[in-house]
Length: 255
Image 1: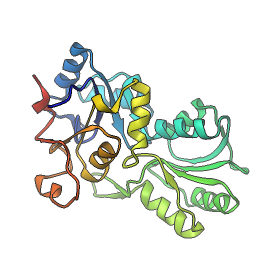
Image 2: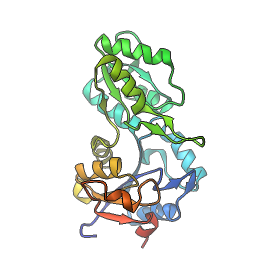
Image 3: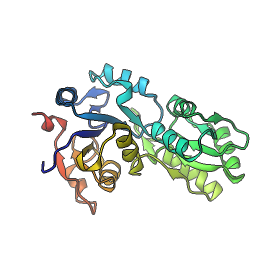
Image 4: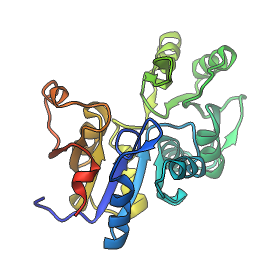
């Protein structure tokens, strides 16, 4: 590796855990970073869970990540909106991840003339809430989406996710949302701000070309694609950009 990396951003699903089990070498890599004094954050585009929930879920998989070392699209969204409109109001569709983050950012939750309509990930999108969102956007609320993923995994097969519901709302309102999560490089930039990191000395590990790698390149990071999740070697050829390194898994980063 030609540049010294002193901070790391790593995706969670497909990189550290796969189907609720720790990827071999993942726990050891985090221990290695701690021993070397490297700062790191674990990132996820999923806005359902709070950092506390995610920390507990990772612990059950055998991976120790305290909640202050987790960075979600919900936290990135709340940080962005706190900067844009401190003390603002929002109508939020989503679970504890986004509602808690917005509360902690000082926002008022309301369905009466909010500044923003925020669409996050949820297991059950209510037709009533979507209808309310459409009417509020039509009335002038700004439309924000936590992450663009159009489907999510389930044991029975793919589920429609935030990006798919956002497309429905856009179709009804003719208003495109601002999307905060990957592949928006803002997700990585806000994570680096939290770490006090500089892009020149920050590495990013992900398992997807279309979100992790492209956002990492745009944020100026040292990008590593691991093949323990979604991407395969054949996938890399389909994109007009390349990660800096391709590894089988995070185990390849152990000394």
